[in-house]
Length: 206
Image (cartoon, rainbow, N blue to C red; front, side, top):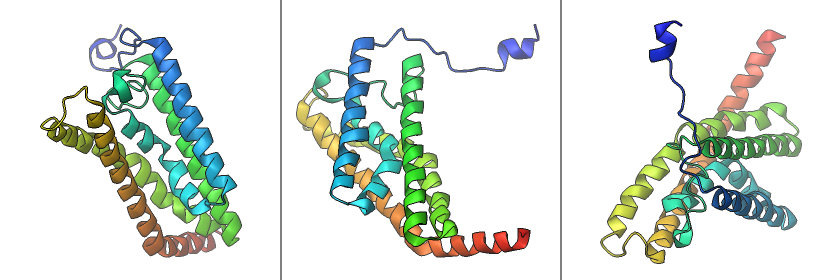
């Protein structure tokens, strides 16, 4: 066999040797019920579509936040929920499913605004901002700064103190909200320019 294939071309070393499967399954089900089903349900029932439009595409960021320290109460239910450094099979599957849910959220936002504005270009223009702001930038930054903040909190609480987890999670949710607000500002200020560019391009190819 070609030595290149043996020595140079690599993939993740996917195993489940470090996974407590019952805890993983319980954690994923809890995440799915609470964050993917229940919260969007109440947002839709209360017609809070603006909040829903910011919430759904960022399900991956929420998973990144709540997965800090493996989850609350030192149960490690969310240790493999959405971890960029995870090399387990179940962690890989979980991360990709959450990305899938978030992408469905993006398609919902595009469809919602296309319907409300009756303009395909205006609806689609949001994707040009939402996708990079959601997938290319925040997750690793949020995890990095949560870890820094968690290390700072060690001066006040030890790693296994419940307050340590919940205070750090609150910080992570504030960071997530900050990115969502930046995303909304980018859409507000640059959405029109992107829409004009798309319309101009469509006229060119007709």
